[in-house]
Length: 309
Image 1 (tube, rainbow, N blue to C red):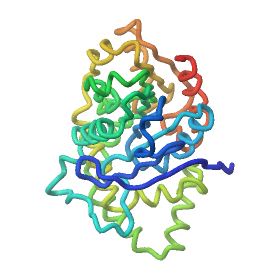
Image 2: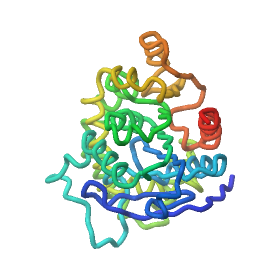
Image 3: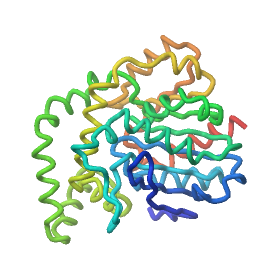
C-alpha cells in the first residue's frame, strides 16, 4: 500500500548534548510556536528510529489536523556527513541509557513545547515509561491534556517472555550481533539489500516502507546504543510506578495487546485490579504495530483525542 506522507519535515537538532533526529507533520518545532494551540508528541519504543513511525504519525496528522512531533532516542539515528559526531559511547554512555533517554525527552519538551499549547503525549513500549516519567515535571505536566501509552513496558520487563529471551540468549551474544552488523555494512549494496529483503519477507515486515529504517538500525553505532538501552530496561524497569499513575489517573490511557510478549495481558489484568479507576483497554493488535497496523492504531488514538474535546 502506497502511503502519501504530507507536510513532513525532518532534521537533526541538539538535545541533551546529542544530535537528535526530529520529524514533524504540520509545523516544525521552531516555526511560529505561539500559533500552535494543540500538539501531538510521539515518544518511540526501542529502537527509537523515527522512520518506523512515519506512517503512524502521518495518519495521526491527516485524521486530526493537529501538528505531530516525533523525536528519536539519543543515538538511534545518525546524521549523515555531519561534522558533529555523537558523544563517544564509552565515555558518555549515561546519555544513551534509560535515565539519559528520559532526561533527553525532558530537555526537548522544556525547550520546544509551545507555551499555550494543549499537548497529547503518546508513548510506545519503553516510550510509555519515558512518557510517565516526564509527567513528574510540573512545567511539562501542566501542558499535557492526555497521555496515551501504547503497549506499555512500564513494569517487570525482565520476567516477560521477550525479556527472558533477551537476557538469556541475546545478552551473552551481543558482541557477535554487533560484529555481524559491521559485516552487513561492508557488504556490496545489492547483496545487503537482497539479504535484508529475504529477512523482511520471512518476518512479514513491509519492505517498501521499512527497508531504509532497518538499514539505519543495523549500523553498528546505532545497534550498540539500542542494545545498551534494552539491557538497562531489563535491569531498571521493575515495579510499576503506581504513584505517577494515581496522581495522573485522569490524564493516562493504556492500550495493551493480548499477545504482547513485552506487556502481556496478565499485566493488563493486574493494573485493572490494582487501580480500578485506570483507563485501560485490550486489543488484538501486536506490540510492533508500526509494521502492519499503523493506520489502525492511529485511527483508534484519533478517536480518543477527539473524545477529549
